Image (cartoon, rainbow, N blue to C red):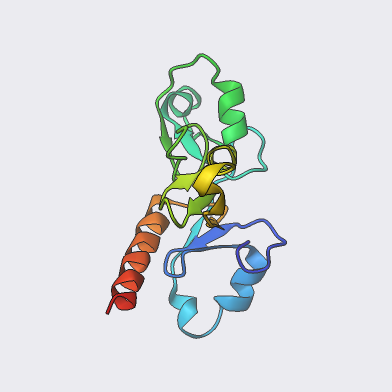
Length: 159
């Protein structure tokens, strides 16, 4: 949860661009203007039932006649060698395209999984780059909002 940092997020608020647990939803989105915000449930992995899903597999969904989504770990474990057509539910790492993005480098302005961020930013000038930890369920819509906010912030800084 992006608010309490303790519980597992269960929904994304489309207006706040936050991933929230049920406790924080009740505390922050049950009164006032936020009660009208749109909350989208975060899908849980069909295999482990624990982690958030990062992609949905069309082939598995067709075979099982239900929506099948996977976390990064389960997808790689169950799809070794398979050429299934899966779509990303979250923003993928720009470097490897294998794992969900977990970091946004504020200098590179790119999104990385943890392994790629640390591998690429451990030497040279990049080791001085600062990054923001992304929401646990960072969607493409959230990415677009963040980029628009960064662009607007950049315009006001240069005026």
